[in-house]
Every structure is written in structure tokens, then in C-alpha cells.
Length: 65
Image 1: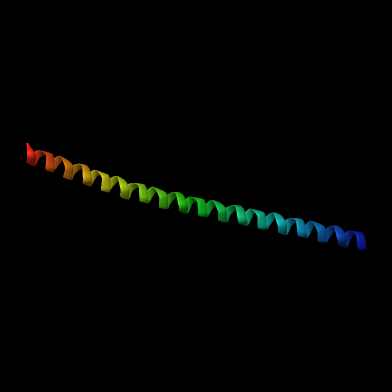
Image 2 (image 1 turned 90 degrees about the horizontal axis):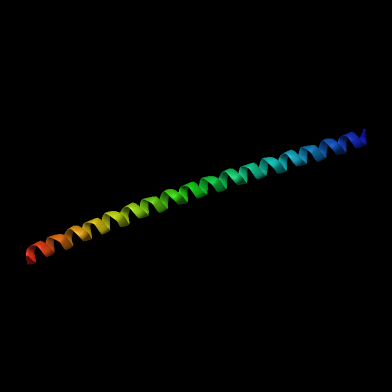
């Protein structure tokens, strides 16, 4: 009986550890996904800024010519 209880406790602990690992893995994936989204948004902002700067440079060149 005692040996069965120990096995049950061990299995329960292993299950809890596996559940915790899965939860941590899921949270890590969510954080990485959010980070990628933030990086993509920043890249889009910089791209628009560069496009505006290029347009202003073209206008300035057109005025000179």
C-alpha cells in the first residue's frame, strides 16, 4: 500500500512538473511573438520615416533643378 502511494505521489509530481514546463514554454512563445510584433511595428515606422525623408530629398532636388 505504501509503495503504491509513493508511486502515485511520484506520478502526480511528474505530471505537475510537465504541466509547469508546458506553461513556461507557452508563455515564452507568447513573449517571443509579442517581441516580433513590436520589432515589426518599429521597422514599419522606420520605413515610413525613410520614405518621407526620401520624398523630401526629391522635392528639395526638384526645387534646385
